[in-house]
Length: 162
Image 1: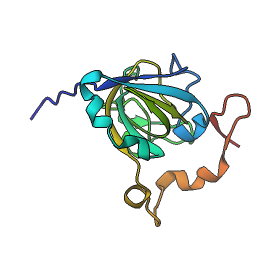
Image 2: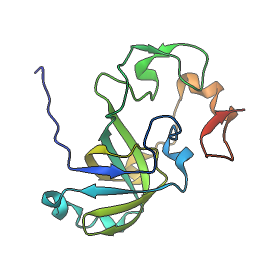
Image 3: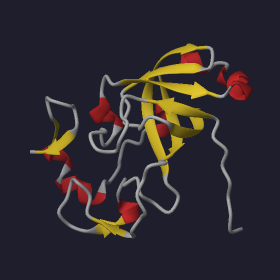
Image 4: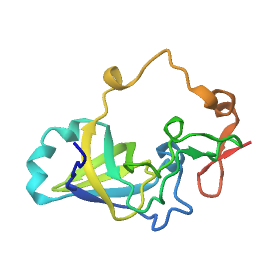
């Protein structure tokens, strides 16, 4: 199997028009509001989603630059393998964000806590279920030494290293 084709089920609307200035992760986009527009032919798939406070959005990082297999992430000064990072430039530029679902109005989902660019093609929506999605004992690799140094800036809410 050499080719896999995905068809967007909608589009994500955001205040972020360019990668520069976009929060690095949803936690850095705390309070940032946006909308997820689901194409009408997928509207029936939204039934029951309003009962969830958070949803997982899977999307195509349509503005990602070409990937390299070694990167130096913003949280470190050391090079790491791409798959040990959350860099958006990947062989298959699929993004994943857990966002707060505020309301559903027809085919428009109103969300908060987002880190997604305007016009991003939506591939899928899944409900966030802590019992399924949270793990108690985890290792976070090279981030272990850095995550304690992470804080949000007051100006734009982006993560920075102290």
